[in-house]
Image (tube, rainbow, N blue to C red):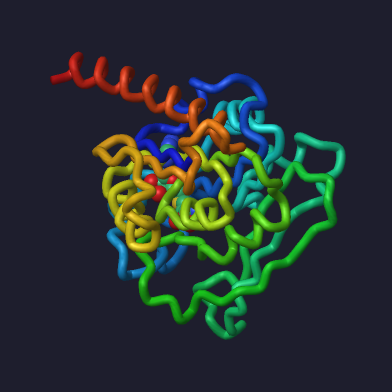
Length: 253
Ligand SMILES: C[S@@+](CC[C@H](N)C(=O)[O-])C[C@H]1O[C@@H](n2cnc3c(N)ncnc32)[C@H](O)[C@@H]1O
């Protein structure tokens, strides 16, 4: 099951016990859009993005490491505290964007810090021809598919605390891997759902509302399926989320 909620990731993580997720693949804001000359892609409304382009603090990273057994964290080069978490940092990951070196405003690569005791790896993939971006820092489905192939096992529970465009959800669905993800911005949350719905069959949609969206894999809801336990756990989590939301709305409206 893929479960996406519109909420602050600290609220999401607070609902889960230690080490619940097998692998967190996250892409927090690097906190640089207001500091770079160009400030990102002109196509996007930077006022919207700059509201959330705030680097997460230590509380976020501590909570992330509490709820997940392993982590892949994009923008690792911006988060100095991660490199002190281990005596050595072996398994970092590079996404080589195949950019011409003459384009001074765009970085040619992105780096992810990882907790994995694996050789470092490079994924080469260009997104220069992608004219359908819906998010200023959108990562391609192909990158997430490669990460899942390299670092996830069948039956793993994946966490993404910063959904953005939703490309990771498409990759998880294609790989049959359970994903729990959230996005704080209503605009990006709704855009991500539209993107996901373009490529996922409508019959897979389990819940579709303003604050929560979920998809099931074929046959997952049948108890003889290996993914049934994860389905039950995620349905229970959605119930808890909706209960909290109802209380919140009752209090403020
Ligand atoms: C760098 S982008 C993620 C891009 C994503 N990996 C993609 O491929 O589209 C970070 C996203 O995290 C969201 N965000 C920022 N702070 C958040 C928080 N505390 N809780 C949940 N989402 C947050 C932002 O709105 C933004 O969409």
